Image 1 (tube, rainbow, N blue to C red):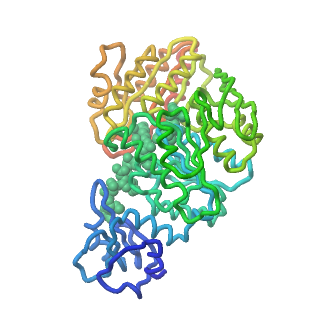
Image 2: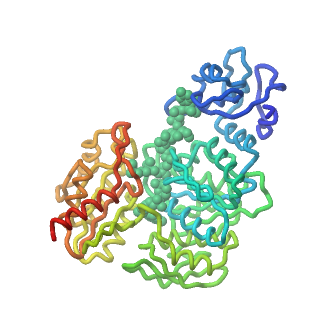
Image 3: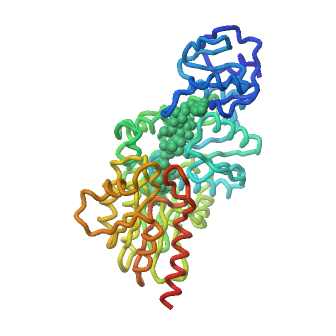
Length: 491
Ligand SMILES: CC(=O)N[C@H]1[C@@H](OP(=O)(O)OP(=O)(O)OC[C@H]2O[C@@H](n3ccc(=O)[nH]c3=O)[C@H](O)[C@@H]2O)O[C@H](CO)[C@@H](O)[C@@H]1O[C@H](C)C(=O)N[C@@H](C)C(=O)N[C@H](CCC(=O)O)C(=O)O
Ligand SMILES: Nc1ncnc2c1ncn2[C@@H]1O[C@H](COP(=O)(O)OP(=O)(O)OP(=O)(O)O)[C@@H](O)[C@H]1O
Ligand SMILES: N[C@H](CCC[C@H](N)C(=O)O)C(=O)O
Ligand SMILES: [Mg+2]
């Protein structure tokens, strides 16, 4: 491709020499992945600055550089104001504007993103659509699964993935859009048709200055809605009206909004709610009529997730019966309120709650049904928001009868320090066990008929990250093994 064609979405740039005759065969944002003929785009990151790797990119075969500053080299350089935005633009041009051909749904909010992408995927699959999802667990393109590094990939990988989707005939793509991604422009260049907001509660204050900054990042998804190249499809924002920040998000988009909720009047509402041991049921009121919903998904938070998915599906033209059927037959998402069953007479649930709000939602749900004691095994991740640690501990103390604080993914931090951050303000009444395996064993082996154990924080994860090394660790497998061992001892 001619580099001038690659720049067709970039309105302003300067060059240090003529670039007319240059052609490129790929786009790279990391010097370590440059191939012969690539354009190398220098990105200023949080750890390092891509401008420092220009020489190495040239050595690897780059034919032209996109930078934010004059580089004083005898090599073609295109100078722009903001390489992050330009990377997204050129990636989208290089891969031939793939989101133009795909109905694209973005989900943002503190909790519920993964769950909603799965619910929507199931609905669209019932409609016999070819779909793709991108998020925390994996990327799924028409049934082919790919591992992911981030919940939301960088703009270059993202556009490459969209290209793959378009080539595989994907009609609808549903993706999680994290606040980091919005802040770092990873989804510039995506032409979203629908933007969904779940909720906002404390998380990521290691990255965002404060909750306002966190909200500002989230609101970019809605501000960006309709800025793309496809003007034929109607764009919608789907907003949880019960969230205290709903009005701000509604104001941040010029596009039509469909609201959902339980407490306030909304376009899609749940009434006659029944939360029970086997799931939920409710009457769903929608602009297309009312319908009775019954689902195995547990807890009030699941009703919000279903309303978000239902509103989106309706806005996308899906009928109510399909939505009802999908919610009835869903098996939920792995690691989200996932029961571990080994014939025991007490409950064991693995859940990805890693924020104060999600932990509270899950424990509230357990409290409603637990006939005995609630045991909570929980820790907090290292190199993440320190201020959520004591809040998560408070929630565990509020709902649990027996609390075992343990390690999550300590990453580069000292596990003891993390646990100290969680517990230093408490006056006892809990156990601390650094070894997550042992913590789970203690909780399970002390449980009896009617009790419930919550193993929180790691959900679907199959590793524990300590000092840069990922060791195999799966809460569900560990719990199952211990349950079988304990059963053997008791019989
Ligand atoms: C803090 C953060 O978000 N960092 C993200 C960021 O990396 P960075 O800014 O640190 O990049 P950097 O390492 O400074 O490098 C700058 C530039 O130099 C280039 N480089 C670097 C080295 C080299 O030898 N050559 C070279 O060219 C890099 O390719 C890059 O273009 O951009 C990268 C590409 O998009 C991300 O993978 C990376 O995510 C890191 C791994 C991360 O852990 N992020 C977490 C916090 C995150 O984003 N989480 C959210 C989900 C949160 C949630 O909802 O719960 C997510 O979306 O995953
Ligand atoms: N709507 C909701 N409101 C509050 N808590 C929720 C909601 N949905 C799910 N949760 C809780 O949050 C946890 C994570 O859910 P999910 O993975 O769907 O969220 P996410 O937004 O994708 O999280 P992440 O930011 O890690 O990607 C669940 O295990 C559950 O405990
Ligand atoms: N997407 C979240 C996941 C947290 C999961 C928890 N197990 C942890 O490691 O903190 C994050 O990166 O902050
Ligand atoms: Mg997620």
